[in-house]
Length: 487
Image 1: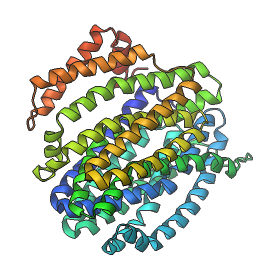
Image 2 (image 1 turned 60 degrees about the vertical axis):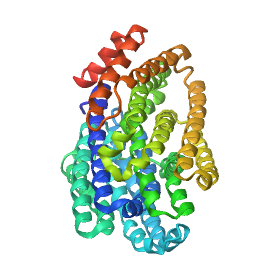
Image 3 (image 1 turned 30 degrees about the horizontal axis):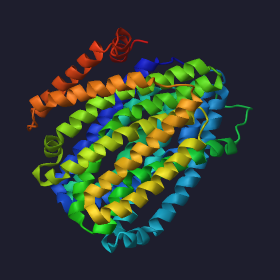
């Protein structure tokens, strides 16, 4: 089977993530204007809670399947379909149980949010779980056999599908239509992926095998990863629910949801990196190639820091025009919490990627416990700060939590992989970011033109790195390799 290079994989998956997340921001922008802050807040509550729960059915077992298939698909192809079928059976069982429980707990969720009118919406959203999980299963399967281009194609199809269905159904049926669309969009992706697998991919591997793969091995890896994803998802959405439950104001919930949605731009940008990192590190760890494993992790971290600093600076400086661009003038009050969240979530993006580095190396308990601690801390801080400072307090609580758990995960990653990034190099990136921030006073926030200003400031940032000899020819060749698919 033809194998894609790492640079080509990053390119394809990054393009798919850009399409997917851009489609998400189109949806949020349109729904924010179409529904208004109150209904948009209700939409955010439903979709965020469903996304949290779908971590149980959508990613844990498929991630384990992807890890084990990536280790053996080139050397023991007879075992690929055995692992896949074991994972499919476990996924179906888990998906059925969680969907039923979620459906019958809908009134309880509504009571916790002090709004029983949310019950019908929660019950509709229960069926998002099996639809999302079915699509996710095939996306992780294609990652496991290194069909990154095919996985990216499926995600691009899903991007277009959810824009069409969510906006179209929301226009005619309001919030209920938008929630229903989240069932239809992944279902269409699953059907497409199943047809491709049935008539093409499935035939590339031996159909019968005398080998066995213990289902307990999948579960032993899946349950800590599942809990990590669950704790992480609760951590990233708990603040929105605390705002709703404590303040009881749909309008402020909608304002905060807008700030939260835009604040996660850095996280979504680097999500594709985890999809390449997990199978890559699983393979190098399985082959005991420790030097290559450390190189992948350290280079990924350096690339993240290099990109995330100018992105965060631009988002903070141009918070108001960014809010206006996506959501309109009614959401301008989201600017300050957006700035605070951008700073914190930039750290959280690093936490997520480094957690997957440890997961790929088999150190699955560390990210699980750190994310659990972060979830609890974020809940406590939000409970204290929201009562005193409203949505600003919620943003501060999430930012503090993000910074602390990122420092913790970097400590463990540094210890396990025997060094990541020298402190002097980190200071150079921070210094270049400070230069960019100082020059931003020459380019004040303005509607639309902020995009041009951001590009100019990014050029200044790279220029500062070049003068400090931190942006090298090797970096240039690496990014050129991604763009032109060179190894």
